[in-house]
Length: 148
Image 1 (spheres, one colour):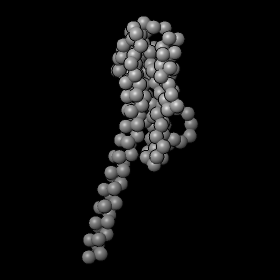
Image 2: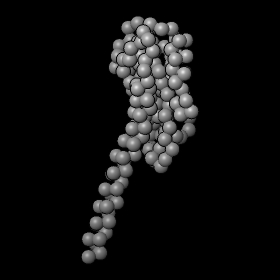
Image 3: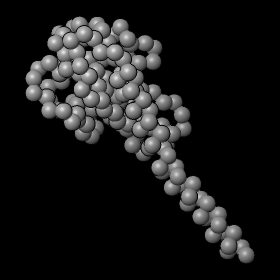
Image 4: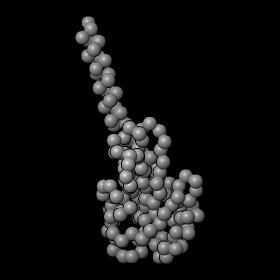
């Protein structure tokens, strides 16, 4: 009888651990995707078209431990960088600070750890990345091994 109880307890522990191994990264990926969605949902300025969005969760820049949540969109615009910076800067708030930079190729160089790139081929000099860093203060950001 005792062996059966131990087997049941062991199975429960195993199921919970597997569940956490799936739920923790999924939850953190959701935060990164929501960060990209916030940028995607902003109206694009005149003479500008939305191309695609991208997101990533993990230890992306710098040293030390900690989860980071990156969300970005790729836009194509006839406007100069300064006007785009002013436009998206006007949408920044206490939660999200939107950064705009020229995008020279598919690769996203701001990401230091790992590779992240757009699907779109960059064939001209009027592509820009608009990005923000998300935030998630909770237990899952501490338990995700990608933050180490």
